[in-house]
Length: 168
Image (cartoon, rainbow, N blue to C red; front, side):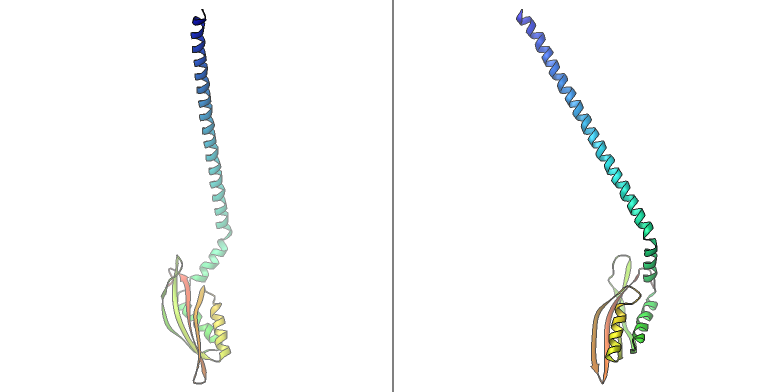
């Protein structure tokens, strides 16, 4: 009689174990799906917040971007005139643009490398260098050479100007 009772109990035990395994597997899968959806929701929320921040920055910097665009949207001729005017305003004589050539520039800008020469007193040449460093257009003073010849000081400076890519 014990043998007859053991087989059904074994079957009940195996079915109980199988049910337990099935339930834990289903709960584990449900928990993984919930975690995946939660992570996806958090990523979506982060993307939306990032988009909102970018849109806010774009709105907040509109005036600054327009001002920068006005600074760099001068033509090559206007840029050269600005450099010559700075040299003359410093008290230099014989202000000349000796050469102008394209130069490397950051993306969406065009670069213009110019060499300017002028003569004058030493203080006037130093004022000119100071003005070249603070031109109203984005620029870099690459080299400055000052020498004295025949009683006059002579300045040779290489400047790199950054203009809008469509500047002509």
